[in-house]
Image 1 (cartoon, one colour):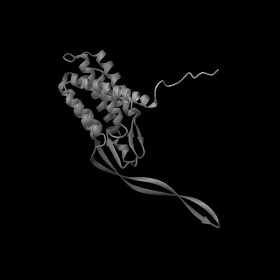
Image 2: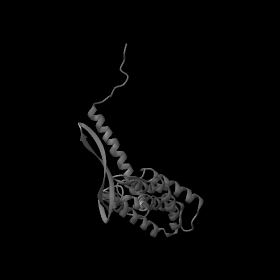
Image 3: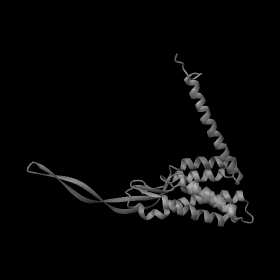
Length: 239
């Protein structure tokens, strides 16, 4: 006798409603944790909410800085028909390309301003933050890859993991007078993840961008925004 072992004890409508409530609940909880972390480093609840919203909305805003021009060789195939037979003849052409270098508001401007605020508020953490920035810069630069038509891209989880590990290790080994472990840790993780990613992925690869054929290459934008945003969030959750 066959028995039905798996079944839903309520309607599909209620199931989707419960899933929505679960997702919304976790999102609200996560948002509350992040806002609470912002308030611990001197921001008000309103400031924390504004920073999160502006960071997400600012990810679509790019401020142009300059235009790079380059010649990109392209090989096209032409066919010549002789006595009823087609012969393929490769032809090399050079295409004039212009790439606009821009800076992303949500992925560069806002995170850098927050980093500057943290370093100003906790100046004793400057040494550890500098070491964290250097470590993340080296690691991020080693994994950053130029992507034709897009720009420079990095694995999303590498910068935040590198920044977090660097902050934990540095604050465990080096004790700075006037800077508690929690304070130094969050500043090192945040500044390291943000500035280290921008330097290692974008700034050190500016020379490669003009040959990628991308119409726009945004510092802190596509390819690196997710890593920078995650670095900031994880750093705040360290508090």
